[in-house]
Amino acid sequence: MTYQHILYDVGDKIATITLNRPDRMNAWTPVMERDVREAMTAAAADEDVRVIVLTGAGRAFCAGADMDALKGLDPSDIRRAGNLPGFDMDRRPDWQTRYGYYPSIAKPVIAMINGATAGIGLVHALYCDLRFAADNTVFTTAFARRGLIAEHGISWMLPRLVGHANALDLLMSARRVSSAEALRIGLVNRLCPPETLREETYAYARDLADFVSPSAIATIKRQLYEVPFQTLAEATIDANREMLVALGSSDFREGVASFMEKRPPRFTGK
Image (cartoon, rainbow, N blue to C red):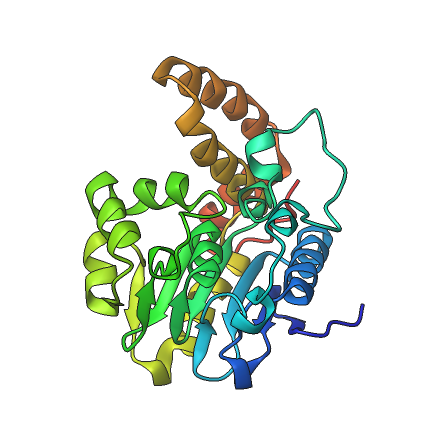
């Protein structure tokens, strides 16, 4: 696959998707939208990939939508996603939206936030499972200062990470948020000096890839993203059902064997 606005690389069981318009601070475009979705789909289907890292080239993660592309935008274009896969009636519709498909990927997706993150860039960072950020990163929702509203499900996802009051603050004011505040309110999971961000992110990703059962991760991820739609009883019933499946899996047998034999596990995801 040839990509125009991203780079795609696989190594050590980790797929890296790099937004690659550094001269434009990786401003989001329809081409980038297509490239990222196709790369995410490829990584999800690749048996050699256990973890996905999304990052940006240069000094920004993604500074928002390309403003040149917004000039003269036909309002009806916002509803034309383009190149979306067919709707799957057997899967939750919530994770089949234009940008909200990350939770449906049965692998961990880590945002390695290397710089400015705004607007649609922040939306994508929030849909990732984890966010590791450089400690000089600045965040902003941006929308209200452009005369826009909370786009693409950020009004649903942001409060679940930072709480209702903080989400209202960030969305209504569209103010700049420092990395230290982002960590304090739960917007990011970890801060790193810029010079060690890559090292620390990939150390964590390799630990997941080498020592954690892929089948367990896939189920745990699904469980957590189902919770907002479940009662406690439903979540417990689901866990009981999944526990029976896990107890019969080869990953469970390997997890016990590797622990007893004091050696690294050789999980297959089955």
